[in-house]
Image 1 (cartoon, rainbow, N blue to C red):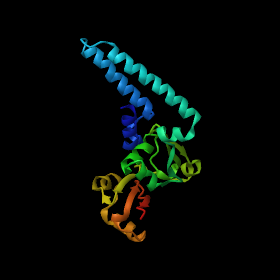
Image 2 (tube, rainbow, N blue to C red):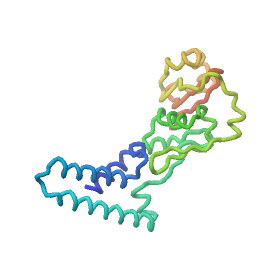
Image 3 (cartoon, helix red, strand yellow):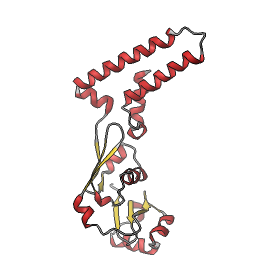
Image 4 (cartoon, rainbow, N blue to C red):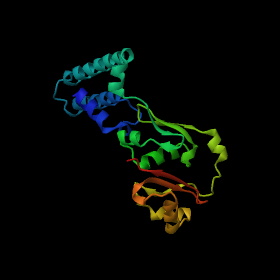
Length: 206
């Protein structure tokens, strides 16, 4: 059951793990459930909970030792850090592999008080699912920031009219930008626009 649950969590994706490694989270869940059995069913021998918990502890120690000694086992059980954004450009393949949505990416950078994608030199998704960001000092200096930060006016090929109102840009202006960039709205993964009508456009990869 330990292996099945851990494998299931790995398949579900890193963003479901929070700050835990898969094996840590599985151990915590199983130990919690086994402990509750002893509390909720006092008529059962306490060894029914103690022995499985000790086995899980031993398995966790064994797994930790194996991970330290073998890199392949480490990657299999914990995965590896992946670069989600590089030089302000979203790696769409990594986003797909991690099952991140456009909103997930934007929330991750905004959580670090970053609103302009161009400021991100590198965004790395760690094995725990946490997103760490290294900002580009040159971009931070050169960007002329508006009073209203960038909002996604197009996301996954769909126009977000509520964000048009926030940024003060018209729908007609958006389509003119798309015409200038020689692309169609259905092919736009993300379009960010700030209060100065400065935009950042990411087209879906084929």
